[in-house]
Length: 211
Image (cartoon, rainbow, N blue to C red):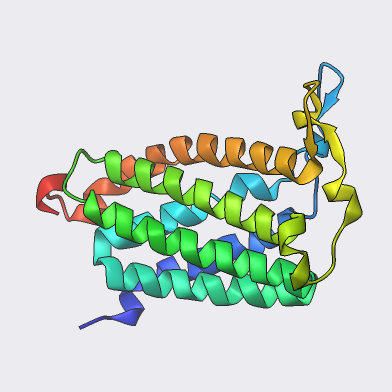
């Protein structure tokens, strides 16, 4: 029987990360590298959002898929609520859809790799989840193909040098998506450190194969 109290710390952490990410996404990374301003490509929210995958994976490892899906559901409701409040309905649809699909996919992939080497499940599930999340969010939120959902920002649809570095041009939202994904993948790799450190607690001292 599911004990909601036992997963309440993970629910709280998921809520905190979703709220923090929705707040930090408003602030560009004002840092310049060789005359290249990262503010044109990244916000601080890109650094905190991947922690949501860590929380999901830790819940999954400790309590199983049912509990992990409950934690995801809480994050989904908060993400949609904040997006409706802080942004447009189109952004809310993009944020909620991307979060829910990517996180539930993460839960399934993690579970299928549960008995493999300890880092396989969290790393592979978060990589695939991050890719799906990024593609869905930026496509739904900004691409012309989803213009029927509401407000279209002509600025993000304008062609510009890819990543602000290359001669090849693409709509600005594609560069934003690529930058966002790059950070998510790096942070996802770093998140193996706290995951590995917490593994004895998550498995009750058992080996990964037995957990």
